[in-house]
Amino acid sequence: GTEMGLDDEGESVNDLLTSLKEYPHLKTLELETNDIGPAGCTILSSLLDSPNSQVEKLDLRDTDIDNNMLVSLTSSLAKNTVLQELNLGNNLSITVAGWAPLLSLLRSPTCNLKKISLNESTINYNVTVALVDSLTNNHTLTSLVLCGNPSITTPGFVAVSTLLQMEGTNLEHLDLGENELDDDVAVALSRSLAKNCTLKSLMLNDNPSITAAGFIALSAVLRNPISRLRLLDLRENNIDDDSTIAFATSLINNHKLKTLRLGTPPPISATGWAAFASLLCDSSSINNTYL
Image (cartoon, rainbow, N blue to C red):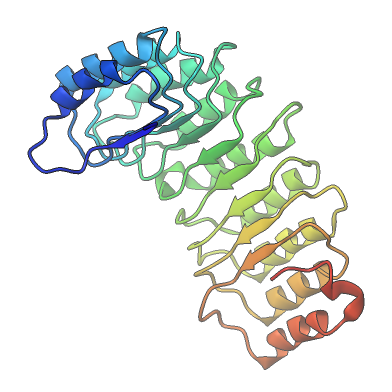
């Protein structure tokens, strides 16, 4: 097979990783929630360092990786041009200072990572600004997951929004859910998206501090003919009638968006839903609108 996970209780992580040398065609390795330890990390680093490695997707969520282990991993990944997806979420033993090796990797012109997940981590404002700087000339990354990181704070997320207007960006998926985002971030995102024609999926779920002002600014993105957004996730937010009407109006001539997630139960009254009903009953737009 080309995919392997570790599920059986009592199975040694080290034994598993050692045995992977016998699976040169392995494409996906999922180790989430397993404490791989320093010894396991050394074995994993050796595997990734091998010119025979074919692992394209590596899931290391909640594996208790610390600063030293991240140094070892990124050192191996600096020589690896095969790995495309890396998940380091929920590794709280990596300190703020410990993210430096990963940022250096992302800055490298040989980095081939397309998807990186850093959800629920120790990343703060300073690390985020450095992350944005590392991605300034990165043209390979297509997916960035930063959900569950409220310590990044509003200025940090405003910095993240600038990625969307950088020349040469190929970012297609951005997940900023569960981050206590506010109107300032929503407006910054809308301004950057006005110049972006690559992003296809934007996750803003569980950010109840965004008000109608922020959502109205975001809705304007859907009126922009260069927008390529196909999925907009706004679940578990305080979307009111004014916001709903703004989105419904913006969707009238939008031919790209396929999924708009509002969740339940948003504080929308019959007035707000009527705007969507009018949109769906309009034969001139129904064939081009997917809700």
